[in-house]
Length: 275
Image 1: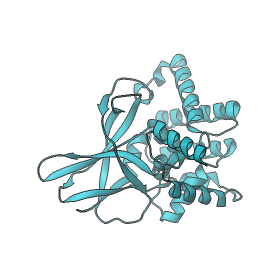
Image 2: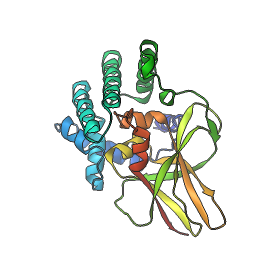
Image 3: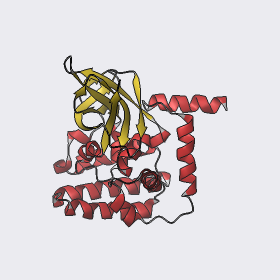
């Protein structure tokens, strides 16, 4: 048991998240109840970025991680149709579909997993390999914003904030992508998101995943907290910031090529409360 706890702690530090055992067990139990249920990947795709009641939101997030290779293929095709319906260009929608199918197929061949079910290391390895091959064969598809490396500023924080799927809409603030940063000046680039400003008389309490996709991005590996900080704007106002690994958003948003990081911001809010 001690070895297991140490392993979990190490895993959380490596992924820059802290895990809470009670929440982790709850998520695991909910996933277990879905093991024998039939998953409709088309319906799941249609509901994956909708704001749902908490119980249904978690069920959809957990169902996604159970999609096998074939089911994930159906999910990817349906998301491509939805992207076109929502105004994406044919070029962008087809690029997302092609890329995610390639990653899905690679994960099936190498690890007998799918785009949705693969472990983080498996997903990152597949993503890096497929992106590199795409760059070597088609310069038109090269886009630096999807690479793991690259230059980015440093972002420092040691504070943790809990992730929630609660339905409370009182005192919630929108978030926007601030940019790509290295956590504490080390490692690869991550996404940093910041909230709209709020009074210094308030403090943040939770980060809310309002859709299955955004909630899943923040709770992969059963994480329940994200590194964060509050930033003073002036003596009367401040803003909230948090950092998240790029792979989390890319695995939770299979059509990420079509503004996945922007959609994550739209699907996520923070709650503030009086001091």
